[in-house]
Image 1 (tube, helix red, strand yellow):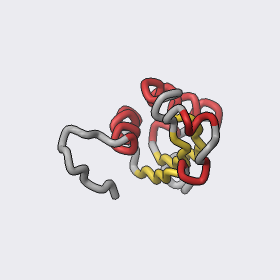
Image 2 (cartoon, rainbow, N blue to C red; image 1 turned 30 degrees about the vertical axis):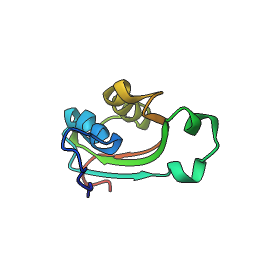
Image 3 (cartoon, rainbow, N blue to C red; image 1 turned 135 degrees about the vertical axis):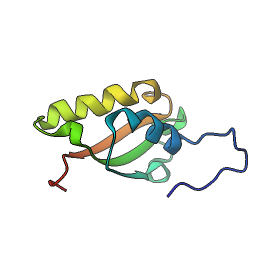
Image 4 (cartoon, helix red, strand yellow; image 1 turned 180 degrees about the vertical axis):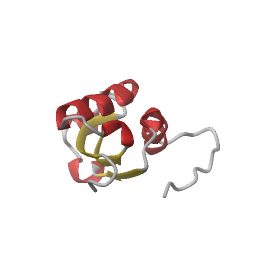
Length: 97
C-alpha cells in the first residue's frame, strides 16, 4: 500500500515505479525500499534507492528469466540511475507465484 503524500503533486519513487510497470499489466507487485540499509553507499549518496521488486504478469508467460528482467528494466528505464540505483528482481507468470 502506498502512503499518500502531503502534496498531491509530489509523486514518490514507489508510485513512479508502479506507474512505469503499468505497461506490463501486473497482477501483483510487491515492492520494498531497502535504501536505508545502504546509507553511505555511493549510489545512495547520489539519491538512487535500493529496491526489491516482485512482479507477477501474464506478459511473462513463456519468457525466460532474462527476458522477463529485460522487460522490467525497459519499463523502468526512465527511473534507472537517478531514482533507482539497485534493483533485486523476482518475476513470475500467473500460477508460478
